[in-house]
Length: 299
Ligand SMILES: N#Cc1c(N)ncnc1-c1cnn(Cc2cccc(F)c2)c1
Image 1 (tube, helix red, strand yellow):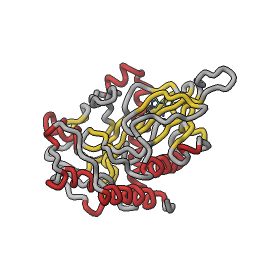
Image 2 (cartoon, rainbow, N blue to C red):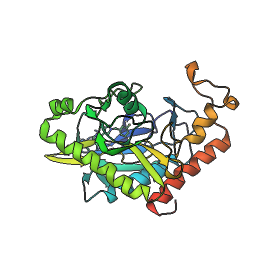
Image 3 (tube, helix red, strand yellow):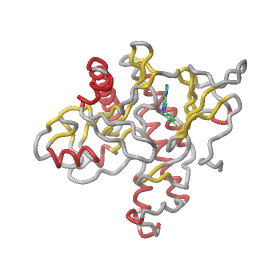
Image 4 (tube, helix red, strand yellow):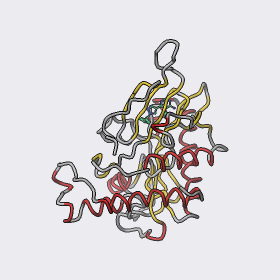
């Protein structure tokens, strides 16, 4: 199993940045030997995170499943928004789990939309009755569906830190009111479309995070879109407001790590142990199931 912690050496590409579960490269111009300034290679690893840790156990094919799912969503959303995808003609070493994309002027906002109340949004609601300054009906509980998806932006925190919620006014101050309204409306529309498709296939998208860049004045959807890494995926047939919902993709990991069998404690601050083979296999199967249910394709 390749060591997922060290960025790959990809001949013809320069490593730019490593995120928790993905890596960024730039194609090198053969004439100058310098990284091109107009393209990037997004590579999805098989790494998985849980409880804010990158686990030692990669999930085989996770990178390819989520890359193919994101590409499928980009094509489903083309009537709503342009995207940054150029090609899937990538080096053999990362084939299937990498995408060549147009380098954009990225907007400094994590564009989050929520269709259900949970996580940090629930915390804010419990404390204030609102999320991102948007007042919500009283009496909502964990997992409740919101009257309609809401835009709840946050900062782009450095790796290892948590994104901080910001009000819409802060987005307007950062990128201007017109552009703020455009990314708000697009983010909400993307989650709405995502749930129209996913709910019919037994999956609820509780929330999602998207990133936009600019191509001149045009807003372009970048990064990944509507994957289990950028969105909370819930099995629709287990939806029951009033307590934390099971995760479609990470429930096996979470349950094993918090069981006595792991010998680990969330509150220890120590890194979690490696996952048993059966938990890895079950988790891989959930990613494949999400892909096949949503796209109708066989992985
Ligand atoms: N997408 C995109 C993108 C673009 N089309 N143009 C310019 N910059 C970016 C860009 C910069 N950081 N990221 C986040 C990111 C993604 C994947 C792997 C990582 F390590 C980190 C995205």
